[in-house]
Image (cartoon, rainbow, N blue to C red; front, side, top):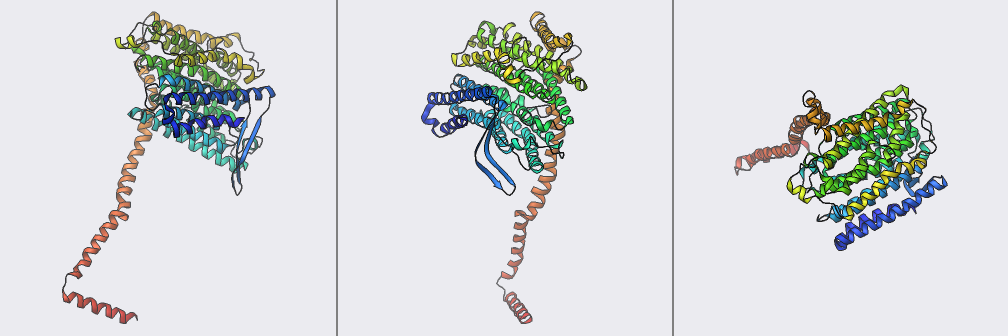
Length: 605
């Protein structure tokens, strides 16, 4: 049965690649959505079997590589974590496929787009169901390749080209670290199979291996330092943003940490580093979200911040809680992105929230769904984000030796609520600020755009309550002071009220409010802490200068050309010119040559 989960997305991609033109647009939409529906149904069945029987399943198809001491097979491992990930990936992918029917209407390359979505889903399923690190790496690289193709789907746009290349290059850093980790795992453990590696205790490289795995996760899950590709990925179509940011590519790094949890637990220092990276990323991305005006970039930086909370949870050794927050995040983040896409679609591709306002009157249904997603993101009571984020912050209070992580998380919670309400007020409830043609074009979209939002809205409302026991079990809330327990909720409400005061009551904007004394701080946040500038000045520019002055001028156009085509060519021309002097038709020259060669023949014979 598990084979069907992989077969349907792969069949989608191959069929659309070979027969997409014959299927036509309508046939492509029906065929791709039908296959993804079947894959999702099978995912539900497998998840039910794993939860009901409380068992794990190992599936071995055939031997793959058998060379000397290196043996591995094509095999899959299904436990609670992987079954949840398979279900979430398939469900979100199905919703994105349905949403794309209307969103991509009129695009001449819709068939190719649907094929890319299916290939993306296939590689993500390979990643989350693999039984060994090499197979996981194939899914890891396949997801990276598909993200490049989807971000650069509108390849005639220069910014899309740049964003796709940037995503590919930045992720190569994490990929290189993951390859190194896999090699060290094989050297130390003699295998790369999860079931053989995790029960084994090896004292050597107990710090290096999880550190390399963490670097790989930092690259793929856009943590502090290697996060710069994630906001630029917004250049792709909005369904791509929902698929990449909600349930697939960015969660791959978190899943890698969860899957390798036994290796991380071998080193307390690695856990502290993981906690620091996660908490700093949560706060860092939240500060940038405050100063963004592009509706998709606000949601993108909120993704970066929530991924920081997941990594923070892993650093505190609450891996089940990280997975729980991952699932909840998948629902409300996909809801926010697809809701934003619905607004952008009706406003003639306008994305700047400063040019919106009053859309509540023309798109009340979209407003309702984005309100639910924003409240879940802010962690308001009884929505999905409340069950996971609040529990994480409560548990972090118990870790006294790294209490700073809790305070950073609480600050990020306050800021998250603030920019979530900022998005709501600016986009829907403020005075109408858009051009007249945008206002006239604003309308509620068709059912292909709204029905996916309905399912995601239901998930955002109830996933936290329904999945808390299957994911966390009988986990108990820590016994802490009442005021500390209420701190996340109080900060969420405070952030919302602050946003209400600045954007709805006083009609001030963030920049106006801080414009008198803190304008430089606003500019600093708006420029994403100048990470791109720092990378350009201290990494990209020196490398380019070195490449030009040393490699290009001294080697490519210097030594290599002198020893290669230009040097050899000049030598042959010079030699030919010298030899031409004896070929001028003078009898004296020929007589000298004859005498010289006869003398040499007699001398050496």
